[in-house]
Image (cartoon, rainbow, N blue to C red):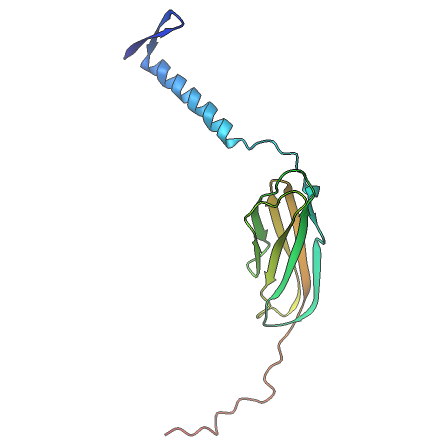
Amino acid sequence: MKKLILSLGVAVLCTSAAMAQEKKDATATITSQAATPPPTTLKPENLAFTTETHDFGTVPEGPAAEYEFRFKNTGKEPITISKVQASCGCTTPSYSKDPVLPNKDGAIKASYNTNGRPGPFTKTITVVSNAGTKVVTIKGTVEKAPTASVPENNSMIKTN
């Protein structure tokens, strides 16, 4: 298929292959512009955590050990956290999906499942944002839950 295109008074004969290539080039340009995030002046230091390591000390086995890492946006643009990833499945992080405005505070909550995990632990949580990547750490020792002080004795139970 051939098409006659008038452009600024100049007649150009285009084939369908040439038109398809022009469309592909235009689509690629639009796609690459849309996929490129706007430039940011934020740096990892703009995601300023109060502390990057929390030591629980000794905690009992059973209940979750929880800590909230607080941070401040010290930059001039909102910080958007895109991903928070724990180093293993025994630690569950949570965070707000709302942008943290300049000079405002935000938080990352870490919950460590102590059940069935006696002994020392050190776990990391990786925080990915438009200000870069930061890693925070929780650690401590889980004290094994005591076993029952009276042995189970089923010989006294009557069955009828």
